Image 1 (cartoon, rainbow, N blue to C red):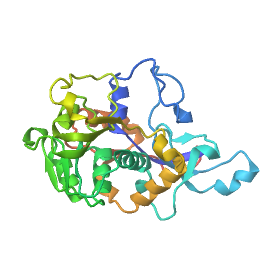
Image 2 (image 1 turned 135 degrees about the vertical axis):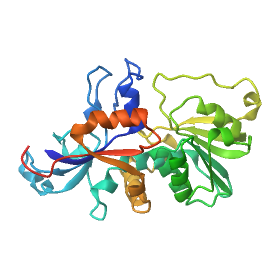
Image 3 (image 1 turned 60 degrees about the vertical axis):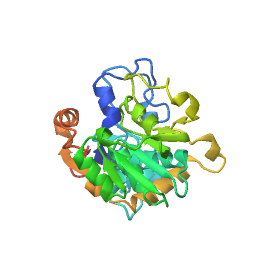
Image 4 (image 1 turned 45 degrees about the vertical axis):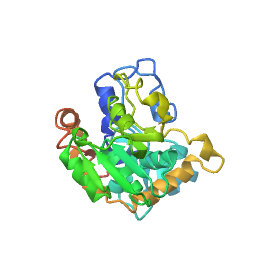
Length: 305
């Protein structure tokens, strides 16, 4: 039994569920046992809980009691999980850092799928938490340029602080078809047209967004046909086959922990709210994106369930 300390809202995905923009016949997430099943409302969601083990059912597991652990589990004050479903939090990371594990693992996956090369021009469209963490990782590479694109000034400023060379609004983009690698993580399918316009001949577009039921017309009838641009779907539930001979989820999780030690995630947290204020939290994310980024739920201090 785990008593939750902190859980993080994954704004892009959770707002899709909140708005009813998820295909009704879709499995919620077959890779996460706590989210098995198809989409039927009402449902519990969320996948970033950090908590403390307060009881075990097996004598052999008693050494887990008192340990801080991470679990891919919906927002809740207490939950039951097997030892295979929880991940010990490294002792040098705080719960407020550890709760970023899913987003950092996603950023690691995006970088692996894009394979940035020395001297490349790279752009990131969409500066939510995943986009900003992706910027922070890409800034470690010897790139010629790293462009960040988002309509919100707060997020553009954060991207510059995390290593982007330039941060622009979509309407201020003037460069065309010059980028080797473009990441689309805005959650807006129309942003794929921006990505197509930025990507040069035989360049790569890594699509990390999940659009749910949202659709938009794409400009595939002009220069795209002769461009040899590659559109790559990137999703963190699996490891790309090109890596899976040497990589498994644990290895990628270990890399994500290591990267969390190097990135100042504290600056991404805009709100810490008691879980009882969840309705207000989702309203803010829906109505005030310019003021919200990472919203955390905090739970009562340890005690009896």
